[in-house]
Image (cartoon, rainbow, N blue to C red; front, side, top):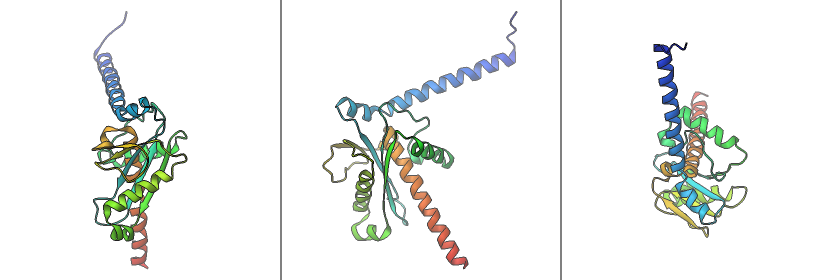
Length: 196
């Protein structure tokens, strides 16, 4: 005879919630592939998500990332870098860069270039640098924002793309984590000089 007491009921409730949460996450990840799927269905195979970090702050470089995910990829927990905790962003950054089937590139434009050409143009330069660092050129771009950098590649600007596209979200995480690491290094160097 099977006894179904309060502990068993609680376990059943927890397992049900986990299954329900997993299904919601799977559906969310499917939704995040909408723009990639449209490009794949149009015959494009190397769809690069592109995003930047550092346009808003008053100090430091602008960093852009381009990221090509394999068709149908699902990175659990991926989201706009601004919506992730530091720990979640770091975990996803490590996961993205460790997957051999993921291709990514980074572009950095320092303060001198920003001052010389303006932040928007420096952002586009960083994006183009990131795209050129991919191991193979993409054939389609999904760029966070309302403008594409000047390139011959076909693409689509996606407002809030880092919340709507998995490859743009991955690029968002790569750019933000890289910029934060660069700022930490700069701060450490500054602290060392001040304490010398």
